[in-house]
Length: 499
Image 1: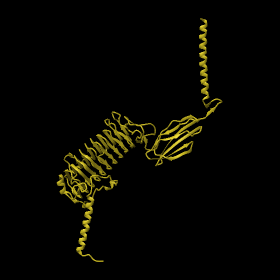
Image 2 (image 1 turned 30 degrees about the vertical axis):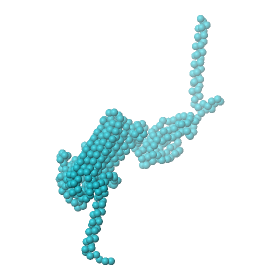
Image 3 (image 1 turned 45 degrees about the vertical axis):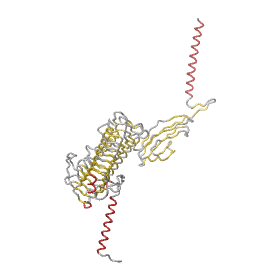
Image 4 (image 1 turned 45 degrees about the horizontal axis):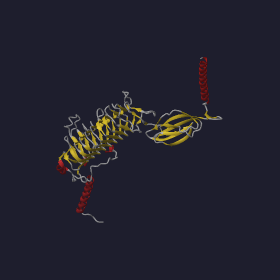
């Protein structure tokens, strides 16, 4: 063992610090604009009172053009593999915190804390309010892992393209949390958004994606969690939205994919106004006070299927409120895809689901439901007879078929239609019962009475039992007809002889 001198200790300390800095810079660099949607728990990232000592203080950043951006960046060269980095700043100011104009260099803004000195909830004109982050005419920018609070507008992206807003916490802003306008290829993903007056709005955009955001407790009176106006060819997927006026709303949009979102405890889950040629698939809407999915009169040619809709419109003051409602003036929306409909809390297992100006031809139940086929009678030896049960459940597990109480079949079940051939059943009366179960043990039952008649063997023919009376009646009728014909012939003969 040997002792280090003070100078050696200082040198080693400097080396360790530089190593840590280089490691940190390595994690800051190497980013491209392509982002993945994290599965991490967004709620765990909320930082109402962050450790401000982790940030460096700045009065504000205002950049126009790539040259100025290079001056203010912490590091990087502005390329796709080595973007400029602005990171770790605390800007607490009543002016716009970070404003970037007219840049094309690759830029990442991360780990920033952007707050106001004086929060103004009175909502002056949004053109005059301060922003947490403002991008205008910007290409190739990522905003990630920032906290933006108590501003007029949290993040605004205008006339820009190929940008991403990921994993940010945005709350307590007097206008929008995120406002995107006149832009293309903007990705908004994995953000936590709450307690703002307005939430996420896209205006005249295209080719965007809004994925895996958690949005709750923003203005519940007049605004939507996600709002698309004149925005086309956009993906809205796997967002969770609660306690809003409308979960997701669409105005004058086409070619939108709305899939796998969860919306609950709003007034309307998904509101379709002036939206055409879009797909609404696999969403879950429950506990909304008016409708789960509402389609306005000017929404056309949309396909709505595989959605889970229940407990909407409970305690309704309007008879029209409920899980789904379509008032399209052209009756052109499809509430199934031709074979698969939606899961309805209101479905009883039989028929179609009426949504006023359209129908779901293939509805399914949330809890197990079964159709009720008619009882069947036929003669022994007849083939090709079967019972068809339409049965469905959101989380199906297994089925049982019993005959007069005796178990005939027990098997797994995947919510598909059930066919039971009767070819192998013997003559007699069979009380056939189907029971389907879901994974929670809930079940539904239906019974069909099958009567199979024997046949009677005679010397010359085989006649079904029970048909002899019919045969006797037929013979009697033929005899009467023959007698009548004979009488007519006799009368005519007599007339001829008399002449």
